[in-house]
Length: 200
Image (cartoon, rainbow, N blue to C red):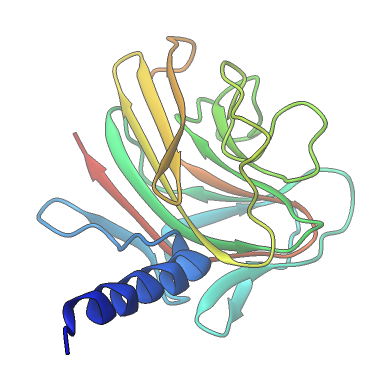
């Protein structure tokens, strides 16, 4: 009996199951990576803006409520210019969230002073994995109801975004050269269980 086809089928099944959980991708390894969030640890690496209820829930940092109009923000205490960023996140169907990069205004974090990697499946204009404001991702990128991976690389003017191992954005823009990163909460439920960054 030939066991190789059965083994290959089993391997493919395992990869499919992993894809459902996190895009069949694993966290990066090697030197130079800075762990900002790891299994719910890392709130001390951020400053809070707004009043979202960021807290540790089941091994992740989660927000599911805010008061008032401004978005709830976790703003990193450190800044970066050129970097590779890796995130693992979970969102429900109502989630309106995002990852800001190169934030230039520490008092008011928005797309007038930084780039935002969108996490909002119901957005009418910029789909999840878009890089706002310069580049839209295809509307096929969806995050709701599963763990996802996001990889963002910024080097000079060029920025790329990949979600679950599939490239979504490749664009050049010079509006915002450097700054902190930030996590946004606007609606629904958003969880981040891992956030890593490596200067380039």
